Image (cartoon, rainbow, N blue to C red; front, side):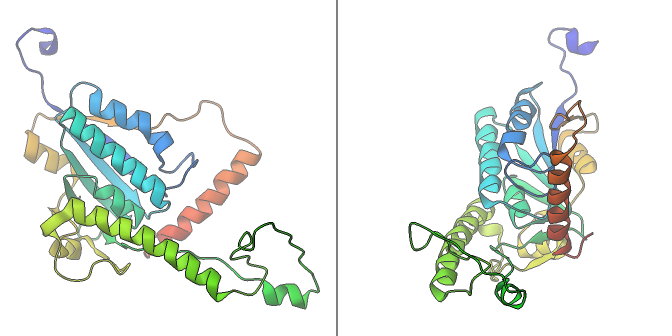
Length: 265
């Protein structure tokens, strides 16, 4: 009843947003700006929270969606003057670490995986397989680079170099984001090779601020009476069938592959 009595303050609350899964545009079960825009807007606004806690478990994914979500978090934090705390569960690697850097501080479990500040592109080549089974590929383009990195033709050095140029640009943006957010907390060691570390080592390297889990850390910072309000995307009421189930299965396999890169199932 005390929240209805004028001049009597209510217990503080922390808005909790779980960022779980791979980062990809259009993914229903993953992380992207379209899905989390209304979630974050509500988290920063509803009930005037003392802070927003990001609970992150992501092996990465789209650099653009990582940047969009992180930028939205920082914009809302500035507009609402609300501090943001990031908590890493199993992994915040690659794009997941990009999201973690949106926090004013980063807290990890000793066995969390953090880092992987790099860019990767992987595909397959089917040139020899096509020759063995006697299949001829016919491709017609307007523009000599339209079929760049076609997996059914031999690689060209100029195609590889062009891809690497793009990767270098994305990597530079990632590095700038980490340096801007972490500043002089980062160790002098080279942290931008794409390597990743445990949470305990990440604290030593300045990739995280300490060991801590969301509930005890928020109680330590905002008092034992702090309340938690969980915010997340709405789940569809109607079950999905047909093509959507196949699409979800495909994205799920891709997500498992991303987690496996860091030794996680």
